[in-house]
Length: 216
Image (cartoon, rainbow, N blue to C red; front, side, top):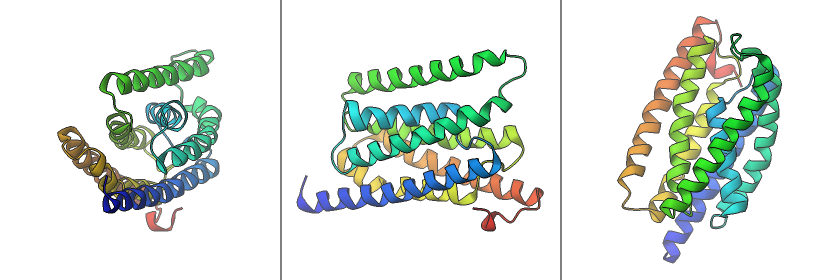
């Protein structure tokens, strides 16, 4: 990696780290205000697993390894909020005593799935699993919004900070994997799904008589 590429990589990671950190703060705040979990189960399990793996198990290159550790610690709060608030939305046809075991099973599946795929592909930067997780978040956020039929637990600024935090990371990622067709597909796909989510969110907010730009 040349000096220029290294500077681009560090700047890209730092900008992404700041924007994603803002996303986490807004996400936690909104969940606390609305008493509703703000991140879908599949996305939460994949996110926490990825950050733990590339912060502690297979640390990424600085500064991403330090950012991953911080995010992993913040994710503990999001997990606590999920366990506190999501039980109310757990399917009534399933015994409530299965709620926590199902969460633990989902987390274990995500962790070992990401870990084994990382080792099989020698993907030591977590590029494929990380960006795959981005697409998972984009799709499951749409699903959560549609399922609830409400903007509870969500705000436009949460998705915008996450969206921009991911976009600014693309230059740094391109330096690490410039020839990956899969990653190019992911870049396009997550942008498309995030734009769909933003459109649906604004529509739903207006249906509820909420100004989406004034809701933090």
